[in-house]
Structure formats: C-alpha cells, structure tokens
Amino acid sequence: MVTHARPLDIDDAPEVAAIDRAYARAYGLEPRTSEASLRFFARSGHAFVAEGEGGVLGFVLAQPVFDGERPTLLVWRLASPPPGDAAAVRALTRALTKSAYDAGIYDVRVDLPDGDASGAEVLEAEAYGSVPTTAFARHLGSRAAAVAAAREARGEEGGHG
Image 1 (cartoon, helix red, strand yellow):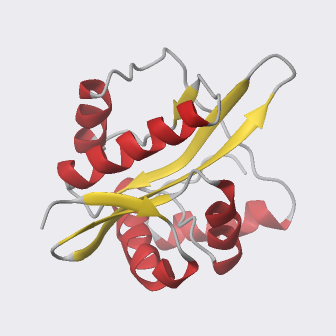
Image 2: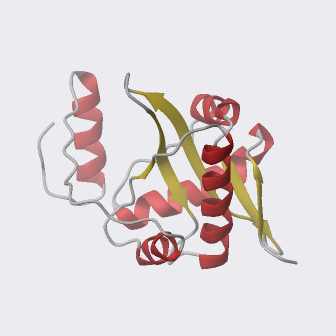
C-alpha cells in the first residue's frame, strides 16, 4: 500500500494523539491534539493524516490567517513518529501545499522543531526553504505555571514563563 494523505477526521483522534505525544516528547514540545483542537483543525480544510500499511503514519495541523496584506497558511504541527517517516511527511506536505494553493494562499509557514531532520529534509526537497528567524514565546498567568511544571517533569532547565 502506498502512503497517501487524506483530510483529518475526528475519528482519527486516538492515532493522531499517540503520534503527537511521541513527537512532542522527542522534541521537547507540548502535545497539540486535544479533542477541541482536532475539531478546530478538521474544519480548517488544511489538516491531513498520512495513511499507509501501518494505518495512520503522521498528520499535519494548519490554519489560514490574514494579516491585512495577504493570507498565510500557518502549520502548527507536521509530525510522524520519530525519527520520522519521510513518505508520510512527503504526502502530508504535498496535500498541505495543494490545499493552500487551491484556497488562494501563496505563503505557507511551517514551524518545525530543531532536530526534526526528516521533516526538514522533506520540506527542502519539496521546495520549502528555511527563514533566518528565532521563535520566542512567553506564557502568562496560570499557563506559565503549567508549562514550568511540564518542563520540570521532563527534566529540563527553567526558562522564562
């Protein structure tokens, strides 16, 4: 069976959440696949799962945003279980690119965690290029305490809340 991408369905939640937990653990991220977030992304028209012989092999979660000048498709998570299934990531990247183009969105931004070599390799092969930026984040209120507790549980150093 060839790996292919299809739109995310809420019934994919158990498989997608398991992949997300493994991916988040491997790259020091928080999972992004609560039931509410998956329902949101499933309605976006830009969320897909990759399927192959082994079932669900990866997923992508994206949403369009408009800054007053032009629309951009923001990719919040492009994941397959580490170390990464290149065929799954390729199928997801192609489905995502087509969905953006079909919607008249000509800028796509993928925030990929440092260390995801498989994802970076596929994106570069699909004509995506890295941009010279560094992302900064700050968590406020009770969210800061939750992030700090999660970092501590993973054995990471503090960081700013």
